[in-house]
Length: 162
Length: 162
DNA sequence: CCGGGAGAGTTGACGTATCAACTCTAAGGC
DNA sequence: GCCTTAGAGTTGATACGTCAACTCTCCCGG
Image 1 (tube, rainbow over the protein chains, first blue to last red):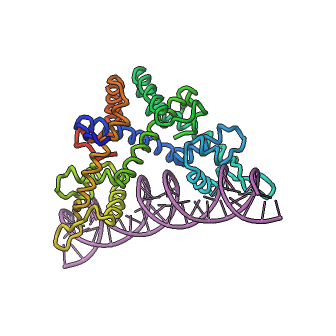
Image 2 (image 1 turned 180 degrees about the vertical axis):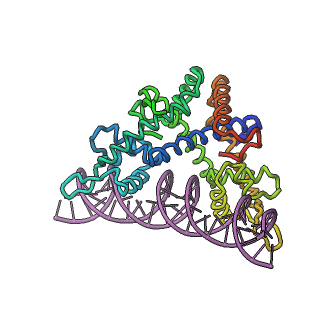
Image 3 (image 1 turned 90 degrees about the vertical axis):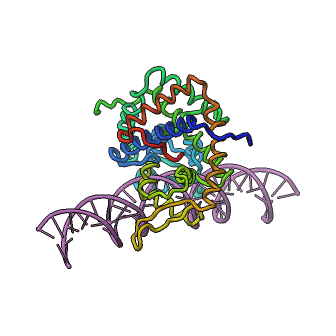
């Protein structure tokens, strides 16, 4: 560093356009989720991750790892979603503290419907907008960026969402 | 819609990887900004936008338009940044309410240094990681996505940041 | 047995983002 | 002149995200 010449105007504009595209796409999808399913992106991520666990209870630490979220973030989100009736925390040991986390019946319903709707939205707003060449280039860049920025996680399971 | 077949596993993984890459990159850059300049991404965006106005005062509505932020978001952010001493609101008319917004001396200092540092980080973490082909494909997709999702704004000035 | 540290989870404080409700001013209609 | 409306900004409520501090339990060395 320290040779940090600032960006050329053209580079800056590239960066700005790219960020703007991401933001617009993300916003559109989040609005769809909110409008069609009445859940937020954060709720969606958690619902999907638990859904993929197929009924098995997960630990907070597992959720945190799988979503790449701070544990505290998971805990706060669980608290909010417990209030909404989507998830429940259960005790592990006799008087132990460690909690397992699972979907309620309502959580399962919401997850199923949201996955269907949101999947369709991703198709419409993102996948369908890509030429095959764009898709393969963007896929390659994404994989390379993840590998560079996330040294751990050799292959591990996909996260829940976003 | 309603023929919303859900995503194929491969599509889902593509989507997931792409979102993850964005999140990691964004996080990295935001950490850099926080660590090196002690300002957040939101603060950076506002500082840059006002910086580009080159001393001229801006209205809340202009900031909102230029950043593509909700007016209320701008107002809240200004309140926080006024507390930090980066910006000041000034009165327009005699007893009128309409406020103009400008940088303080400290705000100008922060903006200048942040632009330099953040520009370098964008280079290192993003621009330098792209092959020319990737750059041109991603640029094309971004422009097309913005045009599709942001019908208004024919050409208008770039926003401040992110 | 006991004291101390490591892991797992929670909590609180604060900054950030969105939505709806509110205030104030200026403009028009009557 | 008064009332209504529209535009501009602010405020409050609530959800989201991060960091640091805290609690509990387990476990290990002594």
